[in-house]
Image 1 (spheres, rainbow, N blue to C red):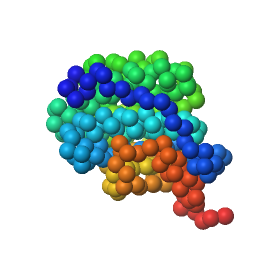
Image 2 (image 1 turned 180 degrees about the vertical axis):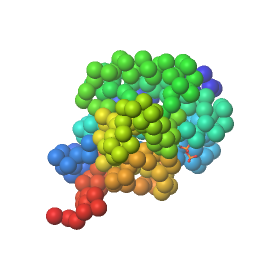
Image 3 (image 1 turned 90 degrees about the horizontal axis):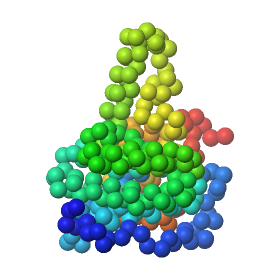
Image 4 (image 1 turned 60 degrees about the vertical axis):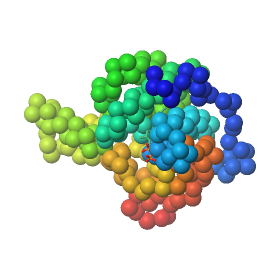
Amino acid sequence: MPKLLKQSDRFKGPEKPIPPALKTQVDPVRMPKHVAVIMDGNGRWAKRRGLPRVVGHRAGANAVREVVEGARELGVRYLTLYAFSSENWKRPKQEIRALMALLRRYLREELEEMLHYGIGLKVIGNIDLLPPKVSQEIREIIAKTSHCGKMTVILALSYGGRTEIVEAARKLAERCLAGEVRPPDIDEKSFSQHLYLPECPDPDLLIRTSGEHRLSNFLLWQLSYSEIYFTPTLWPDFTKEEFCRAIVDYQKRDRRYGGVSV
Ligand code: FPP
């Protein structure tokens, strides 16, 4: 285990609910079904404190827990978290090792709570590229929580939006060659059935922290009509309160999907 991830570090503290005054601003009828998050700014958070980047990721893991709790409390059905992109393999080996160790430990520590609250885990991306111990643990947790239907947490791991689209195109091309699909029958619906999680609705809301305003190869197909909430908050400082504020902000928006307001 990397030196900065001591066994004694605890992710868990007592759970603090969303303040009632804020929670009452949320309209339960207009709750986004699916929220996706680009968790950015762990490195800068650490740098500002003169700490190694790994410490920022560790603080980021606490924010993950906080936001999963917030989403559960508010009744968000799907939460997708961009935890490791296909481009993140370019990072220093030590940082990748630390991120993988963190991920494994986080999942282990959260399993009991996930089962308690009926939270299922799913993954998008190529987890075969992760260290075998990590991918094995992830597969086990996916299996152990497969009956949990209250909420689904989707981790994007070794994930790239363009790769997902290319893989879907390849699967469709193979099916065409096998005579199972006719090219004129391919439309948006049948195409999207070949993406990683066809049963999951597109995100209603995308949150990106740390003041960056880009998609970074995240859910390129699925985010076509999502509302976007950008915040300068660095990911480790992102709380369930701010998650709730993002939802209140989302609920004020007029989603027209290219049409006009009624
Ligand atoms: C971006 O910050 C963050 C990541 C690349 C990884 C996200 C990982 C976590 C939140 C912690 C572990 C995850 C789980 C699911 C337990 P950055 O390093 O790019 O920050 P910077 O842009 O400030 O350098």
